[in-house]
Length: 93
Image 1 (spheres, rainbow, N blue to C red):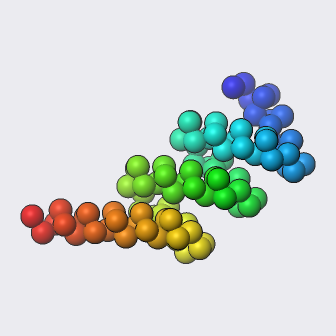
Image 2: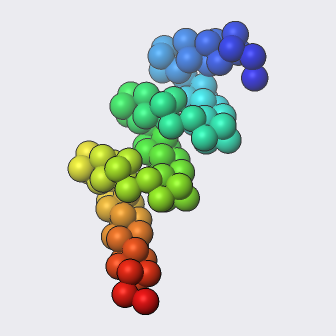
């Protein structure tokens, strides 16, 4: 999507248009745009938080998962525990 289209979606989202927020979350997830997802999460989008947890888990981004868990995401804490457990199991072998 051209930047103009994203800018329009961002403006609509800032005005409280939930459909625009949903589209931005979906597009950011497809692009792997963690910064966009963080911005949307900070604005209150739980879908953006969920997408961040998913991407961070796929990438093994322990720092991002810790940040999300510290901010109250139970899903991030669970994924972090799983990753930590896997790393511990790999280290024992």
